Amino acid sequence: MKRKLFFCMSVLAISGCNSDGVQDKDLDEQMLREALCIIAAERFQLYDEAEHHLQHGLEAGRRKAIRTGEPNEFREYIELVKQYSSTFSKEDSARDLKEKCDRRLTMIEFSRV
Image (tube, rainbow, N blue to C red; front, side):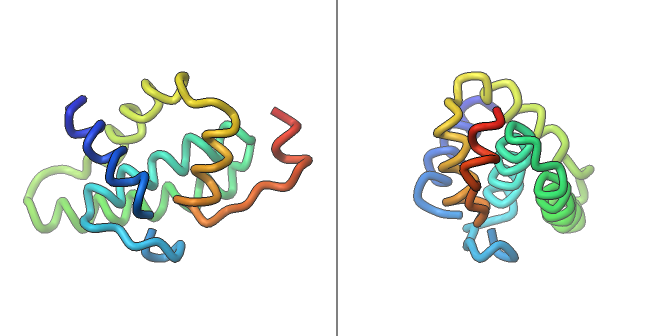
């Protein structure tokens, strides 16, 4: 799973969310990106934004579950990203929100953390 995360994080560095204006290559990539958006939004206390990405991620997980016949594993993606999020700087999280989640922070939002 760690290799999968590393690969997906590499892919995410150059791509981004369909309904957020970012194109993902597949559902796994979308779920990982949405999980990253949730963690970054929560860091800046943007809970409505996090909820928005939670719904997108759950929908992507639902579509994948229908295709594969396996359970929706989106919440596992969130937990996986949470494990690595402690290594992300505040600036990294802000950049992720802008580039991968189509959400630009205000100076007030950035400085409140």
